[in-house]
Amino acid sequence: MRIDVFTIFPGLVDAFCAESLLGKARQSGLLDLRLHDPRDHTSDVHRTVDDTPFGGGAGMVMKPDVLSDAIAAVSEPGMPRLLMSPRGAPFSQARGRELARGPGVLLVCGRFEGIDERVIEAHGLEEVSVGDFVLSGGEIAAMAVMDGCVRLLPGVMGAAHSGDEESFEDGLLEYPHYTRPATWAGPDGIERRVPEVLVSGHHGKVAEWRREQREEITRRRRPDLWERRRLAKTNEEK
Image (cartoon, rainbow, N blue to C red):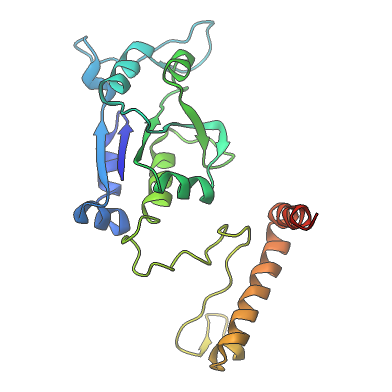
């Protein structure tokens, strides 16, 4: 999977992608990461990438000519072009799987107050958000999107079915996990045991328990997901 990232802090993204699953994917050739600094397309001695906004107001805006030249220099036909933006549509597990099945993705990281709107229009950028909050720039959001996509590539995670029952895969959150020791006393002094069903050796009952846990956790913690799943089932039955 090829991922092109446009950022004025390429070292920040490069360091993040050198570790863990992303680092493994790069080393094995499953991830072709290409970092592009818009400053390389400036023509002034200060390598200026921002300017004051028309109409006044606080902050600075990334210049359209500089950023557009950077994108145009490396854009590949057919690759989705995503702009990390708090006003974008929420990034989802389903969108991550869709991108992971494709040839790659282009990620644009804004800074300051954002980028000139004309760049979004001219390059057909799809605005994507990773949550209802504002970051200093798009790099953290871009890294979250990269991690969400790359871990789904065949060969990146240890087992092919590792992500089958993860949160959001089928509209439910994930079930609780436990490991040894079977009995453990925490800092509060309370002794806690692993649920008996998990040490019973009865795979059918374990599967049933996990399904029930997923449903209960989703219903309590994410009623929006639970309602969406209920409506989807209702529509299927019609």
